[in-house]
Length: 235
Image (cartoon, rainbow, N blue to C red):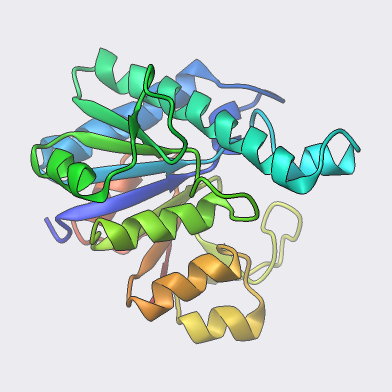
């Protein structure tokens, strides 16, 4: 395999499928199957998942319910719900997992400890990181970049609903053009919405490449791990 250890970033919205809210069991099962196939090939897989299908901090602020910090903490708890759902789907398929949270909640998951996470990966367990970075004002994209650097991942794979990075939103603009590869400098210059700037900067400073790809297309995850060019490479 081209990559020994990778971090998969999934958005909470991707778990909704065709629903308006919550978790689609079929999507959850598909993602679990993709991860299981990667583990069977001997690849060490870590996962960060968002919580946008349940709650976003910005939603609470815009609705006047809470302030930004409180809203972000609520969003972090939403990511733990998604992480637990994914963990359950993987365990049903007999894939060994560990869930680590940046916010302590001992009854349901381990606290994030870098050395322990690496040891789990070395033993062939899928490690799911929940609760973002544990701090408000940081996105799960930043959490994914941070955790990937900490566990010394070879690559970040950002699973989305589209097959790469485009000049514009392909779901809204039919003339949008896909990039096969872009540099970090081009991301800044062209204002490409791949991850937030904090996440991109972390990856650039640590020479950690990102592949943006369509996670909903069966087999894409495995093809990337085998070295095939899928989606858009950011390096």
